[in-house]
Image (cartoon, rainbow, N blue to C red; front, side, top):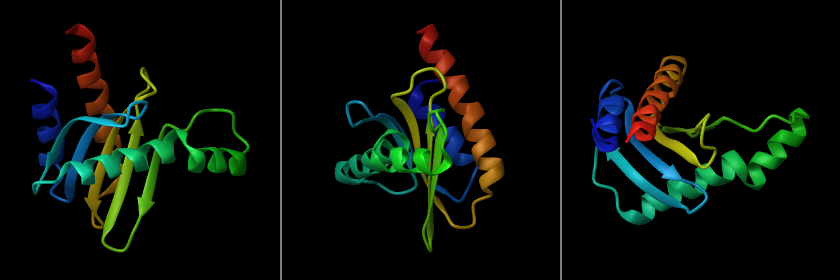
Amino acid sequence: MDISESLEALRGKFPDCMTVAFADISTGMVLASSSQEHLNQEHLDALCATAADMLSGETAQRVSTVFEGDAPIQHAIIFERAEVGLFLKSLHAPNEVLCCACGSGIDLVAFLRHARHHFADFESCLGAA
């Protein structure tokens, strides 16, 4: 299974997941994505930029300061009225992230658990390639 198929499988298990993208936040590039609707490149780039800010940018630094922690942020969640943004940093390659846009009805606990597991699985496939 390639990355695109893997992302499609993850999104397919959660009807409230509208978009999931695999990105490299060091370059600002979305490497693969799956979405319910066609998204233009600007939308994907904005999702990647948000992930970069939330996981390693100024927002991440402010959050780390508030919680007085030295551990890097591994995931971030943005709540909006009709949408939830979920961003997961790789545990093995800190510049690789999953960017997810979901409906507000998503079961966050189940989705986060499944996305983290799914991410680890396809990372191991990438390492084997």
